[in-house]
Length: 627
Image 1: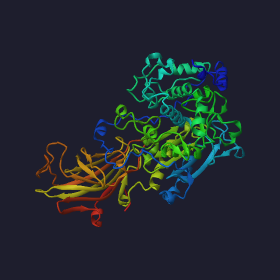
Image 2: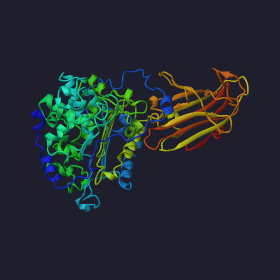
Image 3: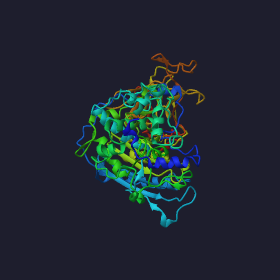
Image 4: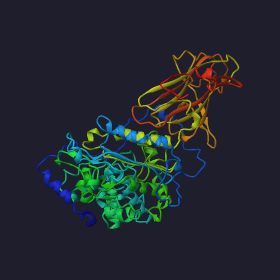
């Protein structure tokens, strides 16, 4: 093996190896990365009916960043288009996570920045609270969380590795379609000779998610060799499997090509130029009182506090491509602003603007399908499970197993950072994503992403595992009419999992038929809704939905005696109109919001919720009426 890979000190690895011989490590004691929560594939019908939202933007790609290298500054919320009153809800959201039973995390630091202005920094809870997995420390021995607390970023470290790889691509040292084995020959073992750099960056290289390095192998060289020679789980380019091993491998590629250890490379080429002086691998002992503690590990016999939590990274000396970086919220915001600045922060040019766009452009949709994972060259994209209200096809960055997350929204130039020690004192309590979602959604509301035109109407989809219905009855003409339903609509729903169905019934609700229609908005191409089902991010637009009241389901015996419209029978007589909002058991966006509801037949308005009497006829079951 190359001497530049094996020369790392491995002091912690030696200590691990020495104790492994005497004590067996529990099989459950590993972080195994930080993948999104497992979900079954969406129903085929939902996937087929998901509207296409990617067309219609008249401006350049949101990640076509040609900024001026803005640097972060402190700003009042209103000066950066954030509603201060809404943003004031964030401390309560963090406090609720701390008081949850069991706590979702012991402590947290939150930073919100928009348009390069830091509008909020907040910390609560404890960087150190527990002595072990069951006993709390006395109050005078605890360490409160602060805005400058240093956290183990865990898998956010992958973004640093990906940035390093892309710098080498820019320099011509490697190419994305190069085989990994052309730089690390041992990687060709077990049929992996054709796996490319890009496939590892996007987690479609076929590698397993995890293997035990820390106790199954005696030293650093044997652990690294195990990574390189691991047998694939699937053929490359056929399946998305979030894998720590791919990023460990890419870290070795960086070391091989640069002649530096990964930590030295990241320091010289990323963190130092950006002035991120509190971002590092293997933080020194004198910073321990500022570092958030993580887990009490029975195998170690102590609480992890001051060194990397991830067992594999620890066994590799604390420096690895998948984990090991420690940082503060303020430092991490600089990295986020660098991406928003098209690779530039102040006078520091870290990446070219076109490289940043490449990194934040999805590469795996054809593999994962509708509702599946989205990955750029390193960053995770469109991640509803923590981007929540800020989710779009362009929102990106990463989470970390220890409880950390970085969300970057290029559509509003917004950065949301939540650093928490959710595995303190045990990973069994960790449920940080619920609070991550609440934080991101609060910021989305502070940005005013829900259009004012629907805020006084009805809303649904803000709770998991529910079905809510909004129903109205209307008498349609029995002959000669062309009635249609019109809606003022805003929808922001987890693609193919949360669905808004537009339906009608002619038999008092015994059966419901979908209403096909079209969504239209200013400066946007129209969006077809052929099956009456709406899902996805909705382009953050207020839409005017038009749904002809015809039976386009193809079912016979609809009970309509009216004429046909476009080959489908027109509904007539007493008809019920329904909006059914269904959410799955986890993860959501801003939901569905409906303003004015009208049913018109030519010039005749049969229902209009702008009329008080008509609004009273709407039956809301599970929808919140804000009027």
